[in-house]
Image (cartoon, rainbow, N blue to C red; front, side, top):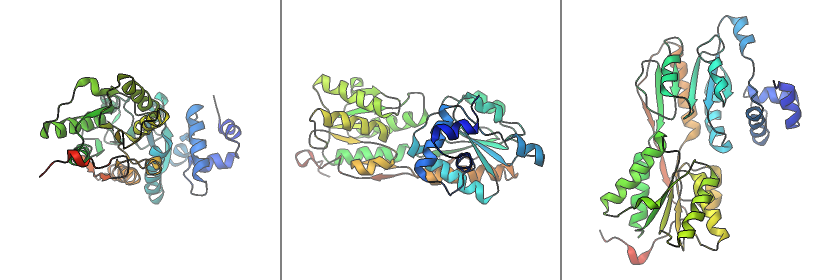
Length: 329
C-alpha cells in the first residue's frame, strides 16, 4: 500500500509538500498541487484521518468524492470547497475510487460531497443519516439527509442553441457525454427542444456518444469527417470533447468556424485559449456553496432543498454569423 513518502518520491517533492497539498494549504503552486493530487489518485493513496478523529472524539473532516480526474475542472471545485472548510476549521479528504465508502458514515468523516456518477443513488441513501449529511453535485435527490447543488444545464444550453440558430446555422451534430448522467440528459434535451421550436430536424445519426474526455470528441469528429456530410455546427456536451473535435478538424484542414462551428459547455481554462464558444459554469462557487450547505447541515441547520447554480453563455470565435441564413424576426 502506498504511503505519503511514496507519493512524495514519485512527485519529486518533499513529504511536507504532499502534506500541505492534502491539507489544502495555500503555500503550494497550482502545477505542484495538480501533480500531487494526480499521483495520489494513481497510487490510490488517501490520508489517514483516523488520528485526528481518535484524538478529538469526533471528526472535523469532510470527504469529497469524484469519479474522473480532469485537473482544471475539479481543481476549481476543490478550491471552493477547501476555502469554505478552512474558514470553518474543517479538513478535507479527496477520494476518486470505491475505497471512499470506508470513510463515509464513520468517525473518520462528518459528511460527504459527491460528484461521482458511479456512486449509485441507493448507496447514498443507505449512507446518509441525520448525523452524516451528504451534498451531491451531479443529480437531484429527494432525501431528508441529502442536499443537491446542481448546475442549471437546460436554460443556458437552450439559449446557446437558439443563439447559434439566430446566427444562421441549420444543420447540427451533437457529441454527448455518458448517457446515464443527468447533465448530459438535460443538455441534450435543451439542444433538441431548441431545434424543435425552430422546426429544425435532427437525425439520430448526428448523435455521437462520448464520455466527456477530449479523445471522444476527437473520435466523433473523425467519424463525422468520414461521412463527408459535415453539419453547420457541432454541439459538444462539454469543452473537453469540443477541444478534441477542433483538433481533429484542424489536422484535416477543416476550418473552425468557416467550415464548421463548434460549441462546448463548462468554460474550462483551455476554452478561452482555443476561442471556444461555450457555457461558463462557476465551479469555484459551486464547490464553496456545496461546502457551506454541508457544514450547515452538520451543525443542525437542516436544508435539503435543491440549489440550482446559474451558468452563462460565452460567445467566442468558434461560431460566426452566416449572413445568407439569418432568421428574419
